[in-house]
Image 1 (cartoon, helix red, strand yellow):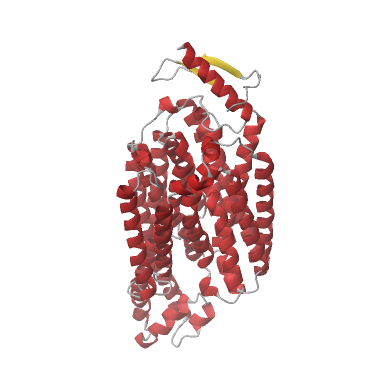
Image 2: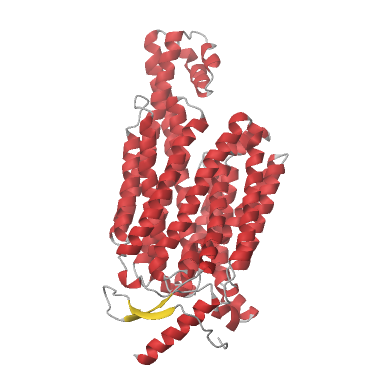
Amino acid sequence: MSNPAPKHEVTNLENVGDDNADEVEVKVHIHAKTIIAVLAVCSILFVQLMSVVGAGSLGRDMATSLGSPTLSAWFPSSITILTLATILPVSQAADYWGRKNFILGATTLGLVGAIMVSRAQNIATAIAGMVFVGSAYGCQSICYAIPSEVLNRKYRAYGQAAANVSSGIGGMSGVLIGGALVRTDVQNWRIFWYVAAALFAIGLVGIFFGYNPPKRELEVTMGPREKLGHMDWIGSFLIAAGLVLLVIALQYSGNPYTWRDGHVLGPFISGVLCLAAFGAWEWKGTKSGILDHRLFFGRDFPLAIMAMFVEGLAFFAVTNYFVYELVILHRMDSFTASLRFAVVFIISIVVAFAVGVYTTFTKRIREPLIAGFLSLMSFSILMVFYHPGLPLANSYGYGTVVGTGLGLVLSNLMVAAHMGTPPDMISMSSGLLTAVRSLGGTVGLAINNSIFNNSLKTQIPNRVASAVLPLGFSPQNLGPLIGALSSQSEAAVLAVPGVTAQIAGAAGAALQEAFKVSFSKIWIAAAVFSSVGVICSCFISNPKSQFTEHIDAPVELEVAFAQEAAEKRRYEDA
């Protein structure tokens, strides 16, 4: 920078007392401008998680009111697909063109999409609007990178705690606001998206006025052509195409096509081939692409990637089946069941804050990660043995267990990845972690759906037959009885020839038992996935020497000057 360093009083030299080095370190104090920047990106993370939770929880009501109930899964899937397609190239481009414009552009698309969804009169418009909403998630990795970049490295755990607290509040808001609105009138899902549009607008204003960083070195020193030349266009295309095709195939599998159907097999094979080509390109074709080889010099970043993938596998089972199981086994309405799911976010908020404090003061990453994955595994094991005879209060306790795991894992996995990443690659590392979590969730959903549906296909006929045939029910009417039970209509069950109150009760109990057994198989798989996360966490290091006073990308120009001048004096004196 050619301008002289401005005068200020915030710089001093002090001994930080690092465990691995006994050296004098520069300490630069941040001001309110940095805190405002962190809060601004946290507002974006808030509305993003609120929207994705709303897309999932309100999907059935939205699709039904628009006349296409079978297409409800495409609302959350649209967000997943757009996230995977855009997040990695945006993460790389943000290193060359800066963060702010990408956040503004993506959030504007989210605002437009929320308005489109709220005003949609048919399913096509609603899905198109959700595609725009999904485009907002292209900047998600940047929003996780900024708190790590603009704060002192020793305070990164605080920054990631703030990001995850904001996400937790957004998720809780999505559950409670969406559930409360449609509880009185199914058409009130439109109000939810009006609220989302307003929150996207607030986030847009917050970023515009609250995040104004100085230009980075690459923004200034590289021209437009040079920047375009440094982009990994081949890798971006292959990874985006591969992930999108894979997600589409997994979405179609069993919904409504079989694995042998061309709708599933075609995109699945194409996606796998694209991902294989991507791996070969990043390994042999380039050293500085999306999978920059510098990311893998240490073990922490690859381990964080693997751990985040299995966290996605495990936690998305919670998001898709925890409430569903409570509704089926306890015959409660979805909003009442969702209150238990809201506990997950409430506890994750508290724990994320606590683990931020713990990690900052102890400089330990590994231990909270191990405890977090053990919590996720414990929850899954508890759910394996869940049955309707248990007190309903247990479900709140189970939500507390999984919320604890979520709060412990997410913040520190991002810190582990950032600490194991070169300073100029924090955005890229955030993008990779965010992408693999979404991919893990999608793969996990396909696995869980397959386990669950295949189990029900055998469990329901066998258990219902065993329950009603000894009571004198005709085997010829077994098919209509199972169909009536699946409709969840008591009138339809009683209308089946030969059904008495006793037979209906026995059939209902058998159906409930079939669901219980099928749910338990999902939780067994989730427990296995979580155990892999425990193993990965055991090998992640505690990089105490990385918790320094240095700020990788100060958002305040005067702080950047101060740090540069003070570090220069330090090396001159050394």
